[in-house]
Length: 317
Image 1 (cartoon, one colour):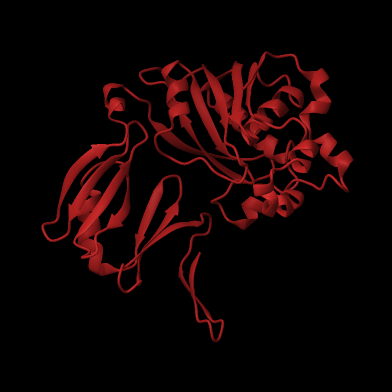
Image 2: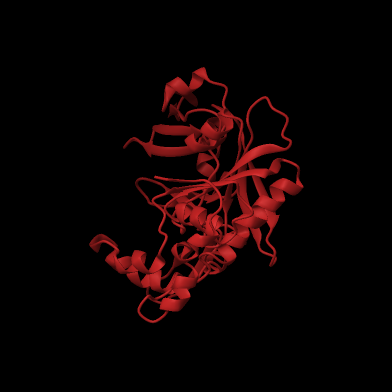
C-alpha cells in the first residue's frame, strides 16, 4: 500500500492499496511533488490515476501504442514527457509526448532488429499450490504452433527475492523460437505479492518453494500444454540452485537440468558471501538458515549432498 504519514503525530492515511500486489512505482509532480499516479505490477503493469488534471494526457498516451506504458521523464517546463511502451513480442518503443498539442512523436525502438522476427506472446497464468497459495507466472508458447503436448523449459528466476514480469524476455523468446514452451513461475518467496507471500518462502529453499515449481509443472501437463516426458529445468543463481534441486531432490520429474551459477551447498554460499553482500547476511540467515547453528538443516537443503540421485543430463555454466 501507498500511505501518507504525518510525522508529528504518526497518523497514517492510506492513499492506494491492493489486496494481492505491492505498489511498484509512483509518479509525482516535478514542482509540487504531489502524487499523480501509482503503479501496481500485477499480471501486467497497471497505473492508477490520482491527479485528474493529467487524465487527458494519460488517455492520449495510452492510445499511442500497444503494450504497457511507462512515463520515464519530463522536461522542466512539464510540457514534454518521455514515454515507453513495453511489449512481450517486440522491443520497447519510445515516444515524446507534447502535452499542449496532445500528440506523440515516435523516437526509436530499444532493439530495432527484433522487428524483423515473429516473436511469441507471453501470457499471464495462475494456479493453486498444493497448500492453497495462489501462484502467478507466465507462459510463452512457440509461435504458430498448436499449444499441445510440447516440450517445456521451466525457467526459474534468480534471487529468489525477485519476480518475473510481463514483457520482452530474451530467454523465453529463445526457447519459444526453438519449439519449447517456456514457463516462468513466481513461486513463494518472490517479491511483489505482499509480505505474507514473501515470508512464506522463509526456510523453504528446496522444500515448499520447490513444491511450487513442481505444482507449476503439474499444472502445465494437466492443461495438456507440456509433454511430461520432455521437461527441462533451467535457471541462474537461485534458478540454478532450483535446477540442481530438480536433478537431485526430484530426479524423476525432469529430463535434463541447466544450472547457471547456482549454489550446490548453501553452507558454503552463506559462509563465503563477498564483502559487498555483508549487509545482506542477516537476511540470508533469517530467510534461508544459519550455517553456524543449523548445519544439518542446511545440509538437508543442499543438492551437493544428494548427488547420488542424479540420473539426468546436466549442463553447468
